[in-house]
Image 1 (cartoon, rainbow, N blue to C red):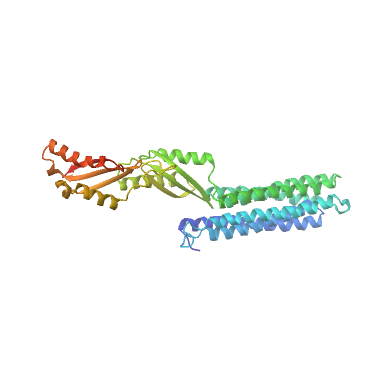
Image 2: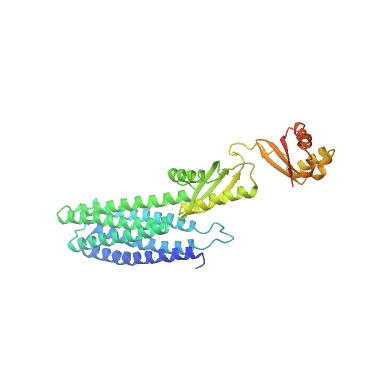
Amino acid sequence: MTGTPANIARYQEARKVTLIGSIVDLLLGVGKITIGLLDNSQALLADGIHSLSDLATDLMVLVAFKHGSRAADDEHPYGHGRIETLMTVALGLILIAVSGGIAQDAILRLFQPERLMHPGFYALGIAAISVISKEAIYQYTMRAARKLNSELLRANAWHSRTDAISSVIVIIGIIGSMAGLEYLDAVAAVGVAFMVAIIGWNLSWKSVRELIDTGLDAEYVEKIKQAIKETQGVRALHMLRTRRMGSDALVDVHVIVDPEISVSEGHQIGEKVRAMLTEQFSDINDVTVHIDPEDDETSRPSNHLPARSELLDMLAKRWSAFEESKDIENVTLHYLGGHIHISIQLPLHLAESSKKAHEISQKFARLAESDKNIEKIKVYFCE
């Protein structure tokens, strides 16, 4: 497969964990169904189908990780992380469908007592083995999910735990049936189906929310805000947007900086924000920082102002009468609050005295009085 070394390592780790889980699911699924048929336990049959559905989802996880870990390309500039998300939706829907079939069959048997099964000790034994083995797989997979920060692995881990819990329900149903309460086995099967449906719904709904770019939870976003505010050079922030793509979190933010600093310093502050977020928050891997000199979230008062070339053409005509205008070395424009602040740089030798420097400054400053778009003009004398 192609991808970054980190993505390849992530896929290899996930594959190892999932393959081990799939072997356990295959053995348990076949064993439960076989014993369920031989030892007359409908609940164990349902649990066996649940285990085989785990096997199917294990394969989906492998496919999702293989393709979702591929590097970004021209058609997918943000990478392929959403493949994991789509597979998680599919996994949830499969679980809901499986639960519906289990519940339907069990309910029909409840209304037809002659079809109720009578399980024995073999069914009880394999159900107990299932509880122990599936809880072990849950712990193993969940550790990998935390390490890799994978919602898909976390979902698969919980799928394993539901199998363990459903096996507990099966044990209760089998014991009840063996004690003479024959309907408890079918009731247990309905309980298993209900649990599987809930897990399927939760997985699908969470992933659907990701597909429509639902933001990260409020508490997490607040931590991100606080971290940005504490970055040196950031005065404030607004328009913070977050979303998730597979195991990665993406952040877009506008930060307000001192409007008098240079473009390069503003860029450096933005880079500090980006690096800080990716280092401090392990799941954030893509940050877009927009540098603002003022808050433009609700209004953009400077949009109507002329662009640099248009403004300088107009100013050149006005200050052409000034002898000093031919010596202008640099003009800096600041678009703030619906007006333009202009800084003009002149050579130091023109300022023969403080009085002369003041006279020159006043001549240029008076230009601001005749133009409603210009707030002020400052003159600097530099060597």
